[in-house]
Structures are given as C-alpha cells and as structure tokens.
Image (cartoon, rainbow, N blue to C red; front, side):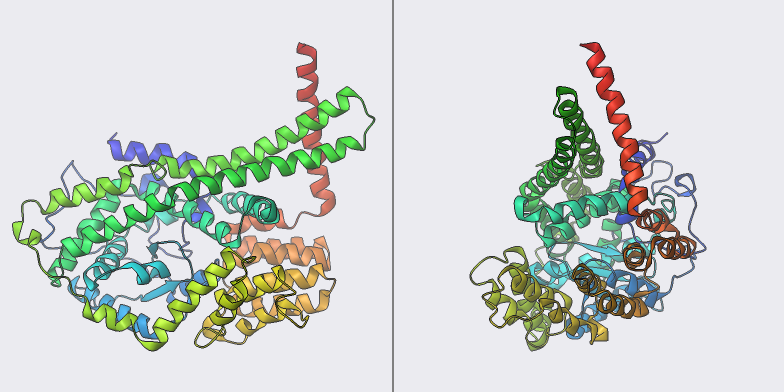
Length: 547
C-alpha cells in the first residue's frame, strides 16, 4: 500500500469524534463516493505532480450542489459571513479571472468572507471559496491573494471534495465537540474561556482534520495548481504562492501556545465539572469511606471520559503535525513548491508584487470601516471586562456594521458583563434583534443566543417566537436543528422533541445523532447517568477487592 494511502487510512479512525464538525456537507451530490476506498489517489504510479507551467488536466464531470444552500449553511455556523459587498466584488473579479484561466469560466461559485478572527480559508463543492477576515488584513499583495484563491479553487477543480462524501456516517462528532465546548463556555468565568475561544477551537479541530484527510499530497497538488494558474495570470511565485504558505506557517507559530493553553483549559474544565458534580452527589450519601471513594471515582471516571474524548479530538491536530513547533506540514509544502519551481528559473526572478489594486479595494471607505469595526468587536468579545470594552463595542455597531452579528454580539456581551457601565437598564438581548431585521447580515448565532436567554428567563412565548423566526429563515441549514430539538423538548415536551428529531434525522443525516441526543429528556439523561454510576461502583468494587 502506498505511504500516502496508508497514512490516510490510519488517521481516518482517529477523527470519528470530530468529523462532522470539520467538513462541509455535500448532501445530494451524485458524484460523491461512499467510502475511502472509492477515492482516487492524486499520485498515480508514483509520478510527481505536473509541471507548474504545464497544461492542466481536464476536470472530471460533477454534479454541483445548490449555491444558495451552501451559503446558507455557512451563515448558520459560528458568527456566519461578513456582508462586505465592495471587497467581495473585487475578490470575485479575481476569482473570475482564475476560472477563465483554468478554462472553466462558467463554473458556479463566488468568494465569501467568514466572520472569524482565525486565519483560514476553505472551498466547498458548490464552487464557493470562503476567506476569513484576517486574510484581508494581512495579505501584502494581489499576488498573494490570487495565490490563496487559486489554491482553494484547486480543491474544487481537482475534485478533492469527494472526501466529504466519505465521512457521512461519522455523525457522533459534532455532538461530542458541542458538549465539551458548551462545558467550557459555562465554566468560562473560572477558566478565562471566551466565546471566540469556542469558535476558534471548532475551527482548529476542523482545519486540523481537513488537512489530515486531504494529506500532504493533495495539499501540495493544490499548491501546484494554484502556482500554475497564478503565474500564467502574471503573478509572482515569490510574492504569491510562497508568501501565502509562509503566512500560514507564521500564523500557526504565533498561535501554537494559545492553542495549547486553550486545550488545557478545556480539559481542566471537563474534569473539574465532573468531579464537582460527583462529589456533590456523594455528599448527600452516608458519610463513609466507601461513599467518598465512590464519589471521587465516579467523578474521575466521568471527567476522564469527557476529557479523553476531547483529547482525542485534539489529537487530530497532532496527527496532522499542526502542534509541533517546526510545522512540518506547512514547511514541507513550501519545500515541495520550491522543488517544483527549481527547474524554471524564470519563475524565480525578482518581479515586483502587484499591490495597488489590493490596497485600493481595502482602502475603500465602506470596506475599511467594516474591517475596523470587526477588529474592535473581536477585541471587546475577547476582553469584555476591560474598561474600554464598551466604547469599542459601541463603535463597532456603527454604520456600516450596525446590523452585523459580530459587532452586535460584542455590544451584547459587554453589556451583560458590565451592566452598570451601559447606563439605563434594558434587556441586553434586544441588541441582538437588530441582526434579525437585516437579511444580508443574519446569523443563526444571534437567534440561538436570544431564544436561549428568553427561555432561561421564563419568557417561553417570546423565546419560541424568536426561535421560529430564525427557523423560518435557516430551516434548510442542518446545523440549526440539534438546538431546535432541545428547545422544543424544554418548552413543548420531549415527545415533541422526538418528533422534531425524527424529521431532522430524515432530512439531515449528518446531524441525526445530535438531534436524537438533543431529544433525550431529563429522565432519560438521569437513567443514562445512573447506568454510568453503576459502572463506576463496579470499578470501585474491583479496586477495593484488590486491596
């Protein structure tokens, strides 16, 4: 078995707990394979990748998923997308040139901006490319931006999204990740965990897994594809593909320690919460040595299990060499690209980067205001207790981002944390409702947060109204349904939750396990906990007998 296939198969077992979170679905795509065995290796007969200036192989036929549905799916995740029409028009102009150079000018898809402060980009089988905000703030030339878009388009052209169809059955993943992230959020005040940390963790798990699944061979092939197109379009290798990969390596290096600290916080929170819960339960039992030992053992077992599941998810990053300080994955891609261009001295000349068009696009008045306001918003979300957080959040919700999810969430968060500083007492949740009124800016996150807080405040009718208005818009986005199932269970009974969960499972296979788990009543959860306690008692008995 070739080394690259052996690597794919061995790591495929590992991400079973985070697969659904990490990759974007292509439900209904007729060309999707059903297993890893159906995926064609990019390297055939041991031959190296094609020349970076050679002719492209013709693309394979495929069935395109619905473009609008794909965009809706992204808007239902995290803080959704950034509505920045001016810079998107510029990026789509570059994307049109890339598709034309590849000989497929009529292919679907466009460029969208992800409301995320992590440096990442990805492409979907619908032909869309999603680029996070930091790319706009960090790229130094149009050469580099074209390299980024060309690389991501390479995944589409080379049809690497076949891999997405191979993981449809791994639908326990998001449930585990959602559980652990939820615990971290609840213990955030004690651990320093923020909302942005939760979203960044989800991203890191997903990106680490995607890189592992694609493997170095596929990523390098997409790099070669991107180089091929970018140099044919007149852009520099030095300031384009090389700079693009070096920026990724630099960003990974800067964030390595934060990622490790975030992991440690989450594992500690998981263990401590389980220990506290078990010890509280044992305190209600007769005060004897066995009862105390049982409570501690139960907590250790429960906390250890949750921590083990989360640790397994984080192992994905280790498997893809994302946490090691020397970044072998990215540096290997840089080295592979250097070898590819070595026989072509003309590609290594010191051509000047193309800067003016990019700067002009980013310095556009509306675009510059959007980037500034998002930067202020993320700073406020990350440090809502800071004295200047309220001023930052208030500035962030000025035009043109007055109805965007991230700035509104920043003001909402700071107002909750510093109620006195906000002045007159009002319901902070009303801040989020501005996002509901703007169709281009809507994000599911605001509906979920608002309905949750209303429900917790016993305003069930108002909470249901918010939820159902959100579902009216996002009903075809699978990621919204596990929350909706649980909401209906808590407000309309668990039989209704199970009915909704059955519909969810029928329509959205990838999240079917999450939906069924969300439909479990407190009594059913208590029974599951009772069984866990019985198992813990059995383990303690065995330990005691050995002494």
